[in-house]
Image 1 (tube, helix red, strand yellow):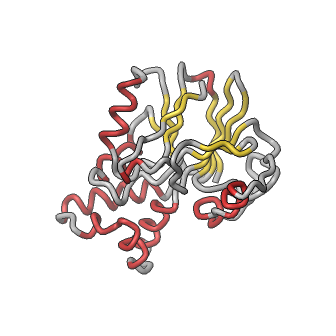
Image 2 (image 1 turned 45 degrees about the vertical axis):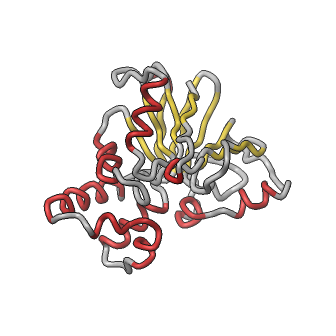
Amino acid sequence: MYHRIEGSEYRRIFIVGDIHGCYKKLMDALDRVQFERATDLVVSVGDLADRGSQNLECYELLNAYWFRAVRGNHEQMAIDVLAGGEFDTWIANGGRWFFSLEEGKKHQAEQLIKLAEKLPLVIEVNTDSGKYVIAHADYPSDEYVYGKPVSEQLVVWNRKRLNAAMKGESNEITGADKFIFGHTPLVKPSLFKNQLYIDTGAVFGNTLTLIQIQ
């Protein structure tokens, strides 16, 4: 469930919001910051594919040495379908692209989705400026501890914390300096206490958010 990254191994580290098949937007954002694959790292908050048009290209990022990701609810829907689950929910949420692939591409997609099954749900990044914790939707506890058992379902789906924060009811999560989440499209990156939400709806024509933490 957990994975730890030591910032000292990289020159710069960036966190990217929900990509949702917008591969070109990611490449353009990396070009703007003069991203160097040999020395820099991108960490994704999950939801690599669905709804956009470049879904295979986004899943192929899982093989890139300069790219890490946590598992999002869209990866989870795909994993569940390949494991024999119902496909209606995935199709309703942008997964139709998978079913329209020709056989060779579909096999490729299946292999990549199996890689996604091995993604951690929580990534801790230790930098000179502090400890960052990245998860898709939420860290469902008020105290972060590396390796602590938490609900996988809530990590990839929960919106209760954000909904409460948007009503003015927010609390810090202890145990790390900042928590970075995606999952819920917002007009702009939004910070509540020490929780930063960076899904800015790139697939709906908005900006793909890329932030530098080191």
